Image (cartoon, rainbow, N blue to C red; front, top):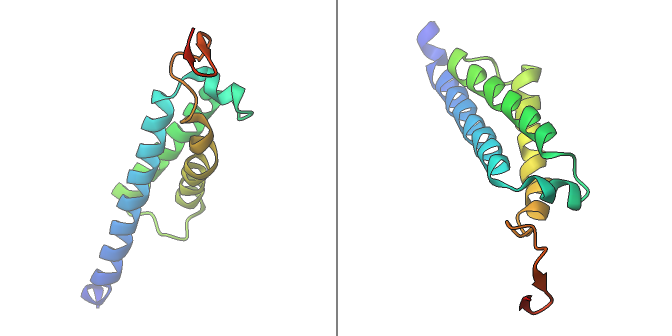
Amino acid sequence: MLGAYTPLRDFFLALGLAAFVVEAWAFIDAITRPGQAFVATGKQTKQLWLIILGVAAVVGLAGAVYGVGPTSILPVAAFVAAAIYLADVRPKVKDFPKNGGSSSGPYGPW
């Protein structure tokens, strides 16, 4: 009887791995963004987002490796945190100049 659930188990394993990839991508993206961009765009601080996304990536990895069920709240919350970052925070902070934009005028550098 255990063999009957193999395709479903494999599906949820693939789903967990895909969720972990999204969480890791969000964490790595947050690392590469300047800290001033988060505050300047009205989002939380970079440190807070790194903590949230780091914990989400660890929970997602544990969920994918140990096969925590898809209805468990922690992997779902981890994916939601990464999705919020990617859908709301990332579009705002990615347009922020890497050098802080302090030496640029409206038509380019001074």
